[in-house]
Image (cartoon, rainbow, N blue to C red; front, top):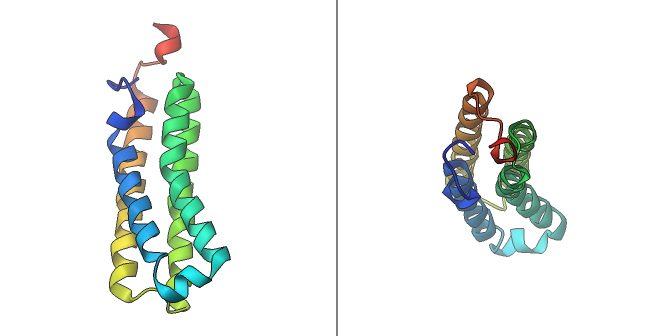
Length: 129
């Protein structure tokens, strides 16, 4: 779909994977690592960014893929909100916040571009080839 043969080729998924690694690393910090609830929540929401891209792609149909891309984009916003809590609780510093926040924005922008591309394309999905 959209010139991809597997989800690992999708730029949005690659960037979301980078986000997951960043989030994982900041949650290893001493105070953050002890807040099991927030740590788990932010790891799940950042993972949802990449996982929904993969799952939507594998559905093989454009309309469903777009729906999962919207969920992925929303998970990026959820991760940003949780980053504010981590900053407010002093689990991360301003620089770490900004790096992760910008990666969330980058993911969301690429996902939005993919959504717009798919909406305007004639591609229906591999099911219809």
